[in-house]
Length: 152
Image (cartoon, rainbow, N blue to C red; front, side, top):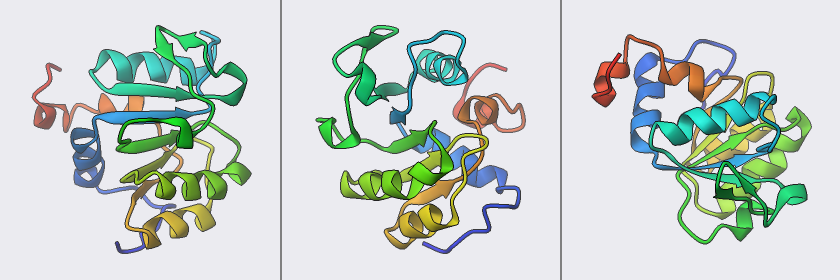
């Protein structure tokens, strides 16, 4: 995989291909608190048909919106296409390594979460990387929703 400059805008086709390719998304740092941004993103992605797996060691065994929470990426027993991260930036390199270890294809970090080291690690392992973006926002950009055959 080429290394991208994650401080620049991503080509819309790049984001569109990721969001149309992935089916199963593990959300690291998912929260049961409906006021938290991660909760809203989990809800919307789930409603859009993605298979969402919340990851949060403090909530393991509980459910968020009817979805069973696991403690870590390693605990997930099905293939994961994308790992989405709602954690502090300094946690990102470790999570990138875990994403590589479970064979994920995409590492996506939420707005405000950024690590060059994590991006390089994941890209060197062949993952596609998106940093400092929100999939919920990207999903509803009208210029490419038609590519996913969704109503605008």
